[in-house]
Image 1 (spheres, rainbow, N blue to C red):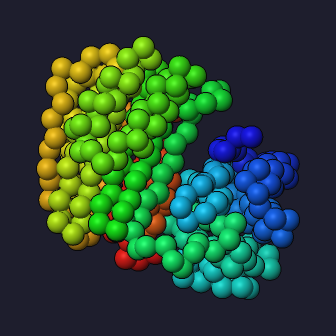
Image 2 (image 1 turned 60 degrees about the horizontal axis):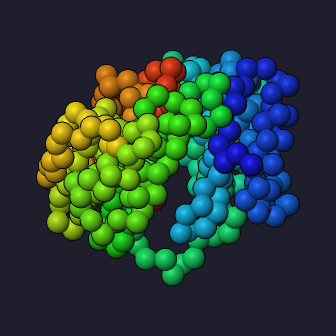
Image 3 (image 1 turned 30 degrees about the vertical axis):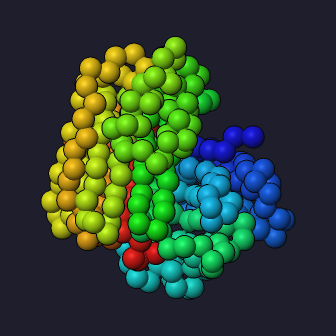
Length: 337
């Protein structure tokens, strides 16, 4: 069973297909039938809205399994006219098309978490997360909240990119790996990189990359980057080889992180760690070269305040190269969600 589904929604018959696939994805991770009913309603509303209000778009459905539990994430992406009155759009009875106006309000109520980002004339991205069960209240507070999209190039079944993260109460470690090329062999290299990362989370970013280099010999190799964020010490340590891009964004400023040339598993001429200050309002964005590098978050007023999954979704919609696998990972202080 696939854990990720990307669906174009451009005509009404695709709404039913989206609902069917979402239900199957929910069953695959153990959702009970009542919860599958909620998932089906959410996907139906979002897909219908794409056709009715935006002239089409796409849905990304992704099953997740974290310490918080199992769940389903749904992103709706469009380049339509945007939501005219965002503040009113969640109120039952509000409609711009003469319908009953219960769509987004229903999605909000049915979701464990729901939010959206919209700009006039530029479109809308909506994000819904539905947990199989409420996350345990005994879980320790995590310093950062993480969101990501990781998609294969079109016509490929598997993604040659991978990512992973590890958190304690005072430390966050994240990796993005991009296997050379795309397809199964690229996926083998990037997946192995994340597995090695998960076994070495007690090490620093530079040390992890050195371990990855040894482990990936015999594979196609991968571009990799790892970052360690210590919010209490207001610092971030970063090491990267190859074309993984990293940026720290704070109060309208952006700072690019330095990676060296090389490919883990093939050629690693130099590994170097760089330490940067981590701001209170810091936002860390890591992405593979499936995303163009010319994006600027200041082009999206208010986006920095949104959930990391929304930020990743907006960047994906507007800057995906479409000819390679793409991964966007976003981390921000866990104070608003």
